[in-house]
Image 1: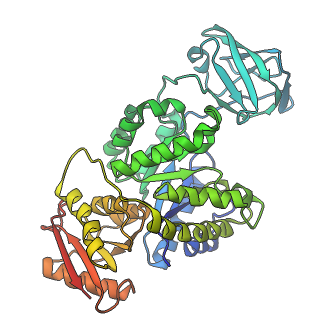
Image 2: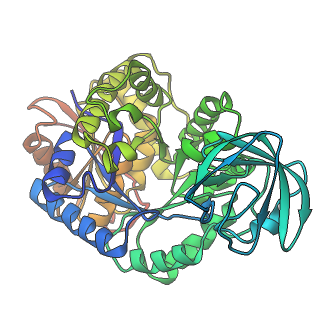
Image 3: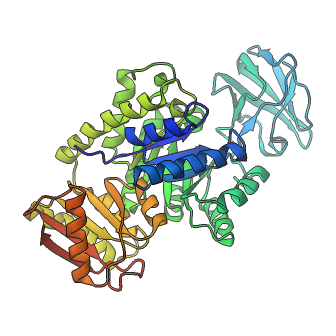
Length: 471
């Protein structure tokens, strides 16, 4: 049995060692996430180098994603570190930094005073504390009534479910991090708090100016992003359903519906989709997941997403390798079930192409003939990405001479990337595919292999050949 749904694991203090990274790869990690909300460049550089060394040692491509912090709003410094808000009281949130108390405090986003409107809701501490804006007095302050009280502390998160943030999702810190990422070997950049497609275009312009090959993952964390979700999916290279802040800012019964809706839209558009946050939360402190968590992971597979992600479980948890192992053991039988009972996929690609037509024809061939593996010679990875969305019931072998392309394929469902030399012609491609499938034990003598390629072989987006061979 082989794993098709990909696993993304976050690097942190619990996993940032050579030994643990190797064990995580062996356990099933395909993509490592470096979270720029925590740590510093020195630590990120060390993690980057350890992953690349482990990748070379293990002999298979591994992707790395840099996750930008974005305009995450937090409470400023408080007297004694924590304060108590009582239901019914009033509290002032001001622009100027202040050592706060239960009557007045500031946040890490001074512009918040200019954005909020009366009757909008302010949430603190993952929604446990609920405030209602009663009066605004920009540019100095606004006043809230405490609807649900509780204890909050320095750095407590602030969420604005009713407020459209008319500011860039890229902070000054993010701009510095982008410069740092673009100068290094990252495969993906995750953009936090995306609200519209212009946010993605802004990041893409910055990466292009810095000649970075990294692709963009748009993180859906704000309810307002759902108003523009089709345009965001069209503009981004991949989508992450980040259920943490999203789950705080919207009514909790809406979260699973939103997850399924975005997953379906990504599937139809041919874009990779990642489900993230609290997938195996109990494994931060436990060696075994709960039954509900196992069901949540399997349900993500049934939503036909490309990847699922571990956050705190692998970054600060006590059992990072066990968490990845539990995730792998869950997704593999779920993949098999999905093969048996899942319906056909119909990509609603706006721009018809020969590549899209050929990948769509693969499933029709498989309905008439048993195929052991589909071998794709790819320059950009697009053919593998589209074929992954068609969910063929066999491995997809992505063959390329470009390491960046192969690492990007680590995010695509059911795709196994493997480095080869660029073939000279179609006959050379067929021979190389047959030999590689045999060496990797993906196909036995006499079994059929579909070979997809494009001539000339060094031109991206040029898949125009489909050959059926017997090994």
